[in-house]
Image (cartoon, rainbow, N blue to C red; front, side, top):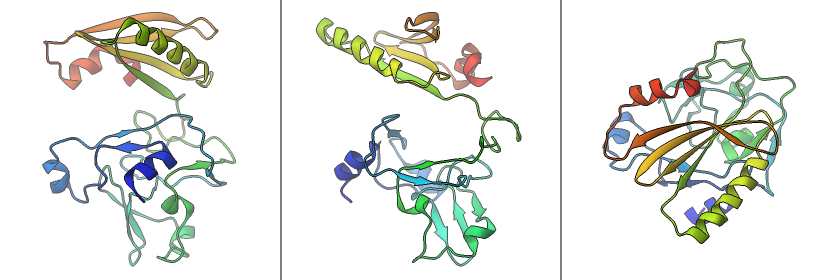
Length: 218
């Protein structure tokens, strides 16, 4: 599938159209591998499956078409951690190059779970606990003309109105300085609880950012 056709079908845009297969390849990439996607995007060809997803035991990544599959050993390799994982028995018994589960065929699927999914391997969550609410960050470039900024405000309010009621939302604005805004309120009015300001000429480590924004990492 053409790169642009894939983006139109899935709403995903990758910085590279090939995923590094080894750690050595990943380290040689000059531009980090990244993906922009549209949350809650309307998808006309959405595939529904009524079972729980298969997760990497290290990263928590869900089995997907970008995973390398070893049909002989019945294992799959996580593209994030490069960890090899054994398929569950009910997968291993039937999987082959001619018989693939939906998550290896379609880039976008939706899981209909019989019960809330346990948070095993989810970062920062112990096994047996329920998954935390969804977390969204909206990244905004404020260096635009006033007319575009007004249109942007309207778009942001529409996006916030579409968020799940239990979602945690933050807005990152950047211009001469970068600002992280924590949003509060659960009604039609959205209030800014707190704003963290980062100077554009000062370099911060990930540890410093993590210390500043403890609410994200708790």
